[in-house]
Image (cartoon, rainbow, N blue to C red; front, side, top):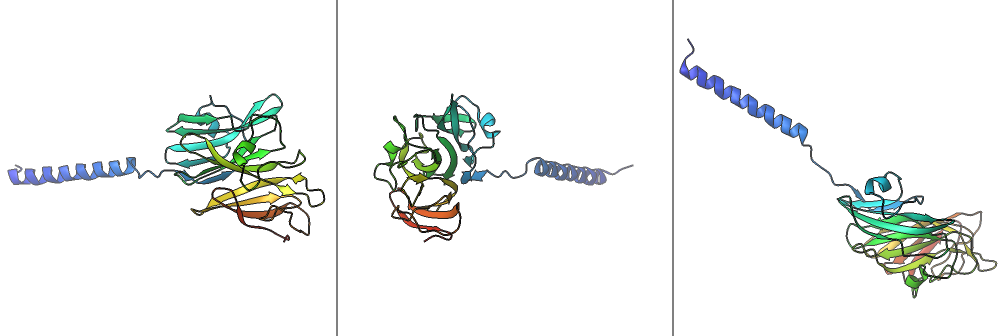
Length: 249
């Protein structure tokens, strides 16, 4: 016959075993969650609309920046033979705002890059192939480093815009282009990286003949283009503190 004291020890040990197993199951089923963070993203332009879901846009593998449950995406809308840039924000998969009004001319504009510090600092990178009549980034670039596409048309240049993360308004913008040394016309430049140090925005790009100095004039270069180009902007995009390119001065 089993004594009462032995039964107490048996049930106490059995209960402890159950608790240990339960703890182990909880630990295995609930690993610690890590929020996704993507500060900078530069890529090829992808097409989407304001009516698309976040899952649809994300699947296109375009440029996006993320902090926790908030994401921004950038790309273009196709209108017949014309592209217009588009930028959108989602919170927890729900659209907060979508902007398609930054450039609505016949210029072939595309959004292809973003930088976000997770707070109030958001920059978008867009392309421009020339100035057309109507609303474009020139209305945001007055008084900034380069206020327009410049002379000529066809070569693809960059536009960098400071955007209000809360509503998508463009606070200000600057064009960023190369300049042909022989005739002063605009030449191609494509941004491939953005970084932010809390005060200045560093832009790394491929610049065709020839990159611009901080004073916007043409550099003197040797070798063939494109050149690896770096420009360090003040946060308000009014000035370039320094500009450099390989084999150029």
